[in-house]
Length: 102
Image 1 (tube, one colour):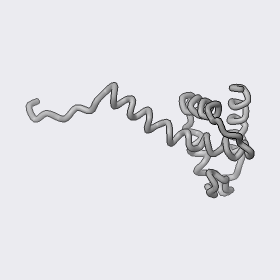
Image 2 (tube, helix red, strand yellow; image 1 turned 135 degrees about the vertical axis):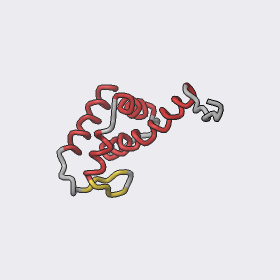
Image 3 (cartoon, rainbow, N blue to C red; image 1 turned 45 degrees about the horizontal axis):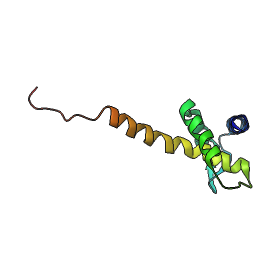
């Protein structure tokens, strides 16, 4: 199951990367310029990719249009993952107020 999602998500990234920047891609029902989607996909690291695969595996619903669903899921994973990382970092390293007594 993991191999299927990994291979499919990699194929989607490759497909988007080969598009002209001026082309549009459907993301969550909206037309988005390929240039912007490429920019997001280029920022995806291991943690975001793993998050996307786990999200695929945990979806209990039957997906009819697999490719558009996975493209949108991968695109959204970047925006969903990094706020969670930022919150975890804040828990580990809370912000300290500057002291006037230095």
